[in-house]
Structures are given as structure tokens and as C-alpha cells.
Length: 129
Image (tube, rainbow, N blue to C red; front, side, top):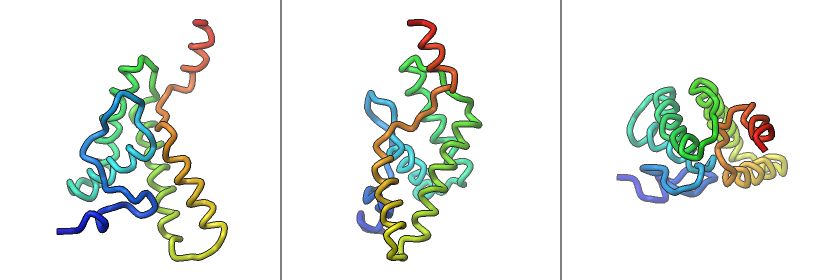
């Protein structure tokens, strides 16, 4: 059995999570940790893990009453987040200032919400005001 430290994700220093909880919209960090729970611990394929996470996140947006993008586009957005993480991970042994700066920027962005709002939802909100 792996130790807790061994199961932590590189750069995030947290273990994958069993569920996304809370009343707030999920952060990029929560979504990434949830993806790796499905992919590593539950043994799902990458696409199956992405689909499962998107299906878990969309109800948060629905409860907030915010129109969302399609499931396909949400999956693409998650794929880009995972690719960005994996690209940084590939360069983790390189000790260059650019790589360290990219890692710090990525870590800072993890606290932002995983935005699945429909592109026209802001325009709709402006019309209703």
C-alpha cells in the first residue's frame, strides 16, 4: 500500500479526492484531484475519468443557475488542464527559472474556479440587468 505522501500529486501536494464537496463552484485543483482519483485509484481510462468528472461538476453549475457549455466542450477544457499539468510534470527535473515560474503560475491558477459557463451567459446576464 502506498503512503499518503506517495499518493500525493506532484506540485499540488495533495492526494486525489473521493468527491467534490462544498457549496462553491469547484476549483481547478478539486477537478484535477478528482480526475486523478478516477484515473489512478479507480483504474478508469483517461476519457472515462474525464467524462465522470465533468458529470460530477456540471450539477454544481446547474444548482448555481448558470448556463453551462456542452459536455464535449467541458471535457476539452478538462483535457487542456490535465495536459498543462502533465507538461509541467515532464519538466520538473529541469532547474530553469522559466520552469519554476510556470509552476508557480499554474499553482496560483489552481484556486480559480473550473469555469464551465456558456460563452454567452455573461451577455445574457447583462441583458437581464
